[in-house]
Image (cartoon, rainbow, N blue to C red):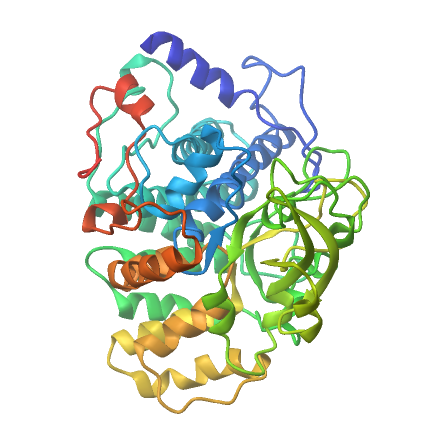
Length: 509
């Protein structure tokens, strides 16, 4: 079995999406093989874009389940007509009753390691390809950034994980034991440092490729998340980011507008492109209510989300937590109204939060509005997924300063974000003030759960949230939201434990 697995891994590395020199052109390459591929700059660019494609594991599907629905921002709409295992596994992640056979947790693990394998193959082959120094350097820099980003996702979700740093070529290097959390972070920082040294600073307009600023953001996050925090080091990285020319866009909604993607606020986005290339995004159709006809929400006929919708639903408490006058509310959340049809919504209108007309309808369901933009085909949208943006850097700097007992210096960064949101400046900044600002500025971008864990608030916040959400979703059993320390990590997938005898499970699972 080990030899078969090894061959499959190697084959997967050669089945990378192809593209032209345009970063977004990722159409399939059907005629390449190990003997003819990895020879030219164009072929390595195709392989690089295949690695970028692998980052999509971190955005929607698995990403929102494990980074957003695990938090106090969102829940889900219970659909009693379909209680299939794919439904239950999603619910279980949100409700803290996940086990090691959870499909979506397994897909996060597999997606990250598939991306890491693509990066490793690319790095190893390119180092000996004899291509120009400039091309080799910038390509390896991007691959090292992506590998670090994948490992950062893994270490946050699973703790210590196997560190694969070279291409898997046989059963001899296909199965590794778990490295320590400290070792994983050391590798993330080493890869980020190499990416910083090889990547150019950002220039505008961007094309979506990783830049030096993206690598600095990743390093800052790692330094502020690892067991032995280095806030001074993170501050230095964030200062460099702030000197790179990034800036807040004038209007909050512009950040998510596909016509303005990769703009001056974007430090790193996962790229998507609507159309027939197979590169479209589609998470609007997961976040909107379950309905047989959602044209009033999507603008597209035959918008059936009966099998997909109802996830990542902003809770009443989340909606109520926005300050009065916060300009981020409407771009972030909308409310679909109508009649309930056995768990499906017959959509009769879409309103802004707080509109008095909502009371005239039988049913009102809020949904994430950040990714609702004009498109012409069902489940074929043009939205990128924001990973790092300038507002995030400002608030991360504020957190960094508070942790160094320099809260007086943090207000300027928090207030830049609040000013765009139409909110008054704050004069006193605490850890809670920063956390609350991040909760609303970065809502529904898969930050909240990891923020709670990083700042040590996850158990307290989610225990209280569990009490609250059981008053909203009265079908939740008693065993849900029994938060304990072990649940700050996800279980190592059962399939991986069976395949790799060197792996050990996480405690509590």
